[in-house]
Length: 607
Ligand code: AMP
Image (tube, rainbow, N blue to C red; front, side, top):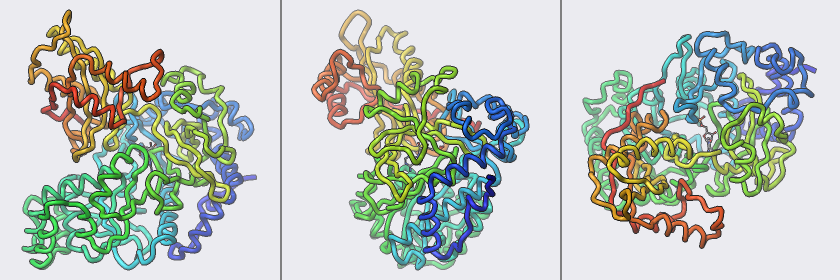
């Protein structure tokens, strides 16, 4: 039996919401059949790639797939990706030509991971985006009677030695004709002209998008960004720039520093006439002492805020609620550079109840069971974070239709773009089913301890960075006894805080610390973190200066006492390298004797 792609990406009338919902019903009813077709299609197409030939001997062997093809981590496939980046033919992993590499926010050796992408995959993503529309229309009426203020941005891109484009998945999508020619004439109307989204200067882009959003405030029915962190950054930008934005609206012309020609042209058209009444109104709202509910005040017709608030973004929910004035927070989708995974079929559910239904025609999905006490389980299946040769060969995976309610799993994908049984690194929990399609809550990313924006810092990264920095204080006769960290998001942008307990060699007394040296320690930690952190910090300004808080002697003993009082076993106690509990943070904070901030953003170059 062979299958043609049109069956896997069915056509329907995009302006017919019912037809869209019907497709979703079919996809979620026929999960087993579709998953089999997807696997068959992928194997049939790619059996002769060097990668699959190595395991399947050129056979279209569906039965043998799980026995013979290993479950892999990025490190296992990195040599193939690097060969393609350096000019080898892409058919070493994919029969379809790989047209670009998508730089993921996950890193390997400090550099972004690169995921293969094909021309056809753009259509798969478009199919996925189109499915979001009938879902939203089902729950919110009248979305076609106005516009969406979406703050969308492109990020820097580079070329690999062979000339392939390397860039983040959303940058690739926004620059594609699929985005430009997006369907739903009445639904997908954005206040941001494409020129402002595609402007590579993020400050000009932000300014112009906010300006256009303010001028068209009466049309706005929904606001949003991809991640909560980006949306809050926009609010902060508005706090810093509303006076200038108002003066542009009052005068009917855009500030001189907007020099990107296409941005300037398109914004000038929208601004066209002086509008002192609107400027007064915005000034009145923005000069209010509290910005509580500012979104509703500035954009009074807004029905919801569309931002991802699951996973590491959950830390922003309360801040968003403060600014939103009680609007629903909608996380529509779960996706990655590897593949787009799932859709939230109940978009108005509260952030902590959000689940995603994996869409079975996107990829072939498998699941590595993770113990109920999932942290331990993750360590078990992970071989302590390093997948030794063959270590995952023997791990039994479960199919999409066989996952069990309440169980934790790590997601493994086989994509149409050359990834085979690839561990995404996300831990998910099954919360229910829509038809036959399981729904998953995003639990957390394997290993990650700190995250503010798209950065993902794990324990090893943190240890490496701290080890480099502590050399500075050790040379002065101090010892770093203990450290831990947390992501402080009480201000925008958030920043990493590292608590250090220091002592002088041979005594418990801590002499006065030299500010310059401690600031240098902060900078060394930042410079040692991976390139996604450094890009967010230096280029996107989405992470603030890293802070070291030095705590008094005995603080980490107090932390241990607290953890033990909360149920940790004394025998197995290990200092947590990242603290989430507010009470634990208070224990540390109440013993702080010095606070130091990095004075320089770390160097960053596009890879
Ligand atoms: P990237 O490959 O850089 O696009 O990052 C993809 C990763 O972001 C996923 O593997 C998840 O860890 C995280 N992510 C994406 N969408 C969501 C979501 N809706 N909720 C929580 N985490 C998400």
